[in-house]
Image (cartoon, rainbow, N blue to C red; front, top):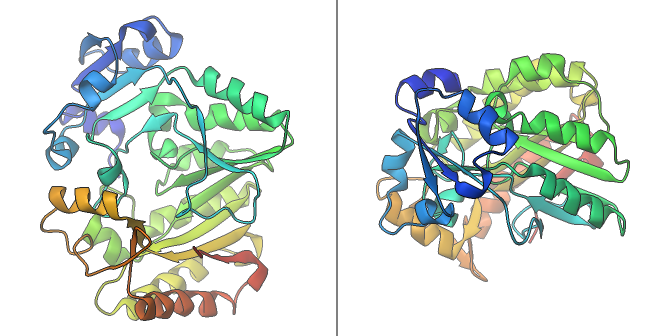
Length: 339
């Protein structure tokens, strides 16, 4: 994978929009220092840029810009119904960033956001304060990397490390850092924190090549996961979303063999399995953005406002993986998504 620095010199982050209210925030200054050649434009509110009409996410992904802003309003949200809670009753997520450096065709962010530009909320301390307030009432399972890939942006923000430090101080907090990244420098210096779960989204290389643009290879993701396991960190393997493609059984079988060859499955925390699913509103927007994407234009089944593969195919794909995984790990460690 190209580094963010290499991407920048190829045109990424040539413009950085900064809310006036955070212009002198320490994190703003630290991020701007990393891009001395960028044109900095002050704005009143991030939505003035992010929510403009008639934007093209496809074109913007070719040359993304940054927006530095303050997170306001709701800081921590209830977990979404299409996401797995892994048996946690108090399931929440937060967005300290919006959008991703990667460009996966099936990513729900393309249906959720009007822009492909990346928003970084620099007032992370406000989210920490809200989390501490909630932790006084009950424990919490908090997903911190749903609307972005924090590890892919770590050299810019350092947010994954900040979340690790915060979680280490709160015994009743568990966080999940979901990623498709292969940030080996981070993994090599990672320390064991029981409340920090690193969740790697894994796909067959054929899926990565076809529609997970700019993401690391399966081999690189597995190597990074193995490094974190070596450090004693809780690691989750996410075969979710499974994406249909011709000869999917062959491709997913080859993927599992690669997983078995690289990862000691006796040392992983658990695995998740689920086929692609998305809200009908998001899919409608994605199809407008990506008229030529086979994965987006699959003839899905609509059920209660959510699209998924036809029941028979969905069951076939998910059982294929769960039955094979059950030969290697206990069934209690296999979480299959159910509505």
